[in-house]
Image 1 (cartoon, rainbow, N blue to C red):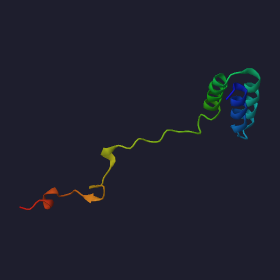
Image 2 (image 1 turned 90 degrees about the vertical axis):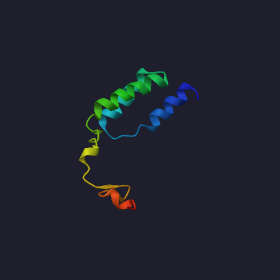
Image 3 (image 1 turned 45 degrees about the vertical axis):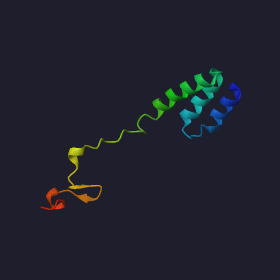
Amino acid sequence: MYEDEKLRLLFSKCQNNHPDFKQEINICRQQYDTYAEAVTYMKIVVARLFLDAVKPKARRNVSSVNTKEINGVDITDMKRWYDS
């Protein structure tokens, strides 16, 4: 694909009703001539405008799990599985 086709595709796929985002798309169209520059600029814009939209998920610790099952198998007494 040629650069102008890539840019056209990029801008046509940027669909968001946020007024600042629309303004940034227009700025990007006017200032950047290459796809790589436009994508880099849009990444920065999205990170700045939608900072609170993506929050990292809380980590899950193995120590916080209170179950005595692994893959649905009860492991409370492992001796019961062996014949004595």
